[in-house]
Image (tube, rainbow, N blue to C red; front, top):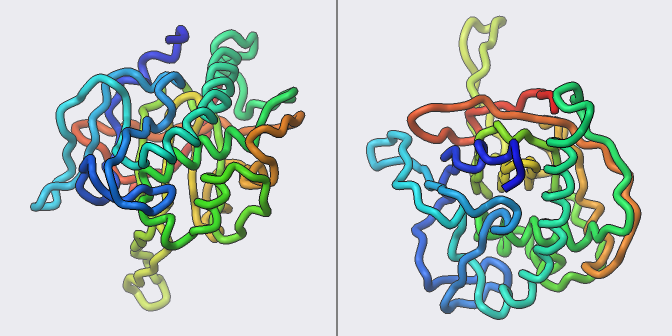
Length: 279
């Protein structure tokens, strides 16, 4: 564990995706039904090896979470064939995670930056984004039905034109930030807005974030196109234009974001707001 990154690894802020967890079910990457393997979200070697407890709601609508277990955040999600094909791509996610984590800890500007800017040389962005989204499919088992093209792009690993209607967003988060992992694909957020002209309230809805992996050093979102402007994260969906083995030099500037801490139980991301932070 990198110095300065350990505290956030053990805060229990994961909000359970919908659906009962079983070892037999439908693969979130290819759609076949059979025995499922565990998908660590994010990869286990990217600091996801501590204690973690999934939260959720009880039958009487109280927020709660279960007993913390060692082994990191994980879900039964992928068949053996898909796991064997896509898990080697985790090496690039792990590489980026350790690079950014080390930079945050060792930088002479530590605690002064609202953004992290840099040039990544000889990296494989197409591999990184597919490793990230493959993990996110464990949180969004319905993605294969609503957005089969992006799931196919991830599963096949071949360069392709990314979809317009769903986007992959990135930010940087701090070691002290609470871990928050959630899947809400297909859900709607209802907001009540004060209408001063009518002296009353009106209700509006918008899509929920499909998946959230707010896990130091990254804050990653899978979001409907119309939500992109609502979050400080940077749209990095274009990484899908590169295949898993293509190397590239990438200039990137990522905002530093944080989430308010909660106590007693996890809170759905729809009830929280990302805030600007310093790193």
